[in-house]
Amino acid sequence: MVLLNRELKQAGNPIGKRNIKWQGLKMSEHMKFLSEWYAENKQEKRPELDNEAKHLIQKELTSALIRKCQVRMQLWKNHDLHYHVGRIVEMDPETRTIVFDEPFGMKRLPIDEIVKIMPVD
Image (tube, rainbow, N blue to C red; front, side, top):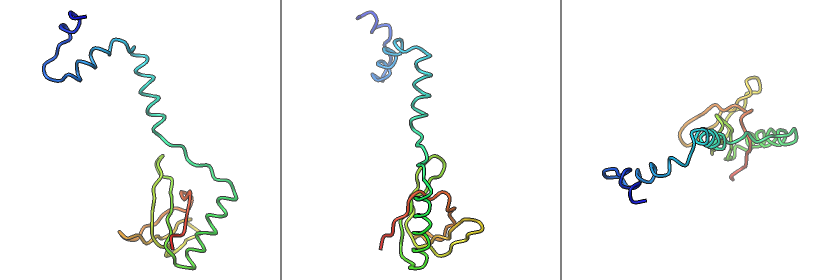
């Protein structure tokens, strides 16, 4: 064991020694599988919404627009959940977008990306 450590000796970084020491126990096929597995598990899956949930989201959108209250929305975009807090200013049914007033300015958000909406007030 002493010979093995002496042959793998590196200057400076003891963590590098550990990586070299254990690298031989992992086959290249295993490394490829592990990297694919980590990449796959890192991506979240889009929450599935049934017709009732979509109807409730639409109802909350129109209610928030009429009441002009502040809402917290959860949107699904690029395999990730995004959160927005602000007021709904306008809703365009033709383009299926809403104009949303946030503390950082106005944004146009697609209705189809909304996963959850909750009134804050």
